[in-house]
Image: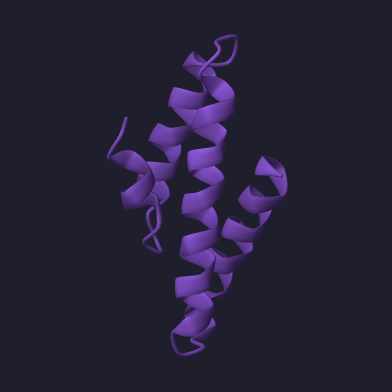
Length: 75
């Protein structure tokens, strides 16, 4: 769980986000959820910055859209 946010920062890591969603579901009614969501928010922001810093590739638009939706949800 501690290493997952770092893996989420890389673009195209939908499998890792599926695991993160599962962890969020397990933590739904726990005290750790707020801290976990902060880690996810940070990973999402770092991933978006990395995507926008790299060259604009139209094939990445769907990944960007997915990350922006996830960012909106986390905020």
